[in-house]
Amino acid sequence: MPKASNAKNTNSHTLAVKLCLDSQVERQRRTIFSYQLALGKQYKSRLITLPWITWLITLLTCGIWGAIAYQVALRAGAHTFRETLANIFANTEDANVLIAFGAKYDPAILSGQYWRLITPIFLHANILHVGMNMLNFLLLGLIVEHIFGHTRFLFIYLLTGIISTLSSFVFAPQEVSIGASGAIFGLVGAYSAFILIHRLAFRYHGFFALSWLFLIIGINLALGFVIPGIDNYAHVGGLLSGCLLGWCFAPFYSPYSVAIRQHGQPAGQPVASDMHSLKRRWPLALALIICTVLSAIIAIHLVGG
Image 1: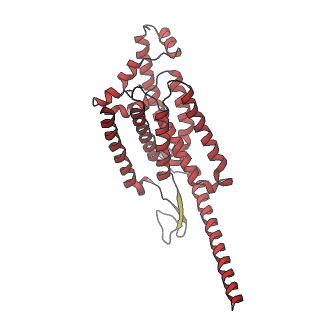
Image 2 (image 1 turned 90 degrees about the vertical axis):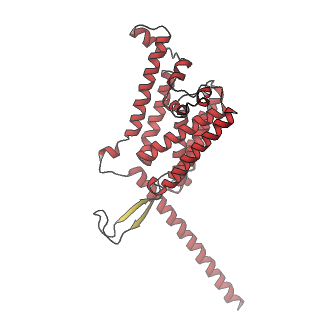
């Protein structure tokens, strides 16, 4: 009897291990399916394929910087086109002009100008500032918008940008803060979450992909401690909120089959459903927006005494 019992236990253990391995293989298969679909998804409409949100934000930000640069040049005494260009390429900046355009300036926010929690995302001090930020934004935005889609991409960019400004408002109240870098760090955080969710689709479970992203993040944060004028509080706020939003809303496609025709597709054809879409998770998105607004109200009362 003991031998029969041992054999039964061994068979049960073997079955449990097999089921566990089958489950891991199935998880990996589904993760690879989701990752490949997110990267290579095809659309019927060319407008949907085009990352037009990224280009629109880039053009809008550069246009606003052009208006700021012109006003800075006028205040510096430039009267001709050549003098204006010389002033622009000298990386001249003027805090008064930036405040007038909507920079994060704590006294103004405390006086009721709450829109200054949003406008700094689109403002830049000089040509070097806007050039570096928009180059990084384009390189990252073209990828992230394709993966996340237009609505989620814009939602993450704006919300992480607001949270980054709010972080600067609380932890660096003496600084006049501007720039898209906090929102760009938010996109980095969201993309990192996407890679983490799909780590089973990578060799070594995404160790090298994630290590590369963490290295880039670390270098940029380290530069913030070395180079004066960089607002690391905004960067950290954008990064952490981007990781959270990415974990909640990064696309994850689950395959299933339909027994009947849907949207003109043949019966039994595999269909992919995005389990993290805004259409499915809109209550969570609304809750996060409300939490951000409440955090802003609390922060204003705390900073304002």
